[in-house]
Image (cartoon, rainbow, N blue to C red):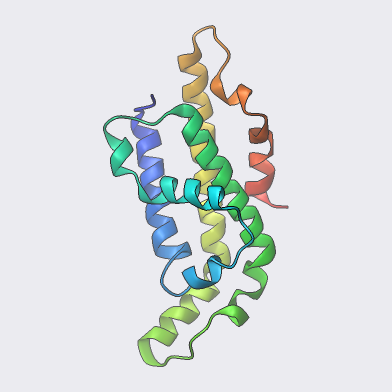
Length: 158
């Protein structure tokens, strides 16, 4: 179980940023059209929405690694399939404040997605360090999840 304060803070920041800037009321309907498996969505939701259930009991290392992997897949697919055409895909003409907010969400989406990717990458690096320190002669958990070798590539860019 991981109870590291920096890990908890990073997970909190990731969730706040995701809810506010990535999956907000303007962009969420379009996000749901992305070709991602249900398991990826479920893991992403656990990472970004369910901090309270882990805050005090701690995180399971392997579960957190799988959530990071899901977030990296999300970033990769979103960058490829949605970011270039988001402005055209947003629905609802609207007027006044909603239109301004929708346009702001669309205009800032790529930079917000990059910040999300950077936060997830920072969490991954922090978690690997915690994993190595707690392994104490054993093999760290991250080494038993071969898919993690692609996390950096998916987060940095395709």
